[in-house]
Amino acid sequence: MDYIEFSSFSSIWYWLGVLVVWTAATHRTMGVPFYYWILARRGDDYMRYYLEQLVPENANLTLKMYQGASWVAFAASASFLVTTWGVLAFYYQSEILQALFFLLVPLSGVAVIRYQFARIITKTNPKFDDLYRVMYRFRLYTMLLAAASIFLTTFWGMWVNMVNSGILSVSILP
Image (cartoon, rainbow, N blue to C red; front, side):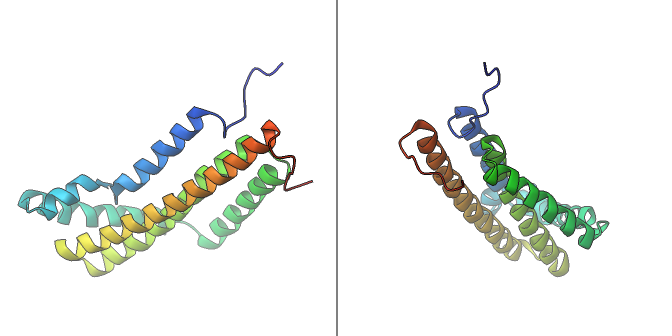
C-alpha cells in the first residue's frame, strides 16, 4: 500500500510548482519586478531614478555572493552532484528525481545568466536606457531558458505518463 504518491508528472501540484517557479524567475529581473521597468520606460521619473540606484546595488550584491566561492571546487562538486542526480533519476527511473531534475537544473542556468549580467552592470554602470536594454536581454534569455525547460519537461512528462499508463510499451532504458 502506497501512502505517498511519487508520480510527479501526473500531479497537478507539480505542474503548478513549475508554473510558479518559472513565473517568479522571469518576472523579477535582477530583483526588480518587470512592471517597474515598464513604468520607468513610460516616463515615470521617480521609477527611473529608483531603478538606476537599485539595480546596480543588486548587481553588486549578486557579485559579492559569488566572489567568496572557490570556483574549481564548486564546479567539481556541482558536476558530481548533478551527474549522480541524473543517473539516479534516469537510469533507475525515479520519477520524483526526474521531475526535480527538470525543475531545478535549468534554474542553475538562470543563476549563471544573472551572474554574467551582474558583471556587465557593475563594469559599465549604465544609465537608464542602457540599463533597460541590458535587463530586457536578461529577461529575454531567462524566458527562452524557461520556454525550453518547460517544453522538455512537458515532453518528458507526457512520455513517462504514456509509458506508465501502458499506451507506450517502450522504455528508453533497460
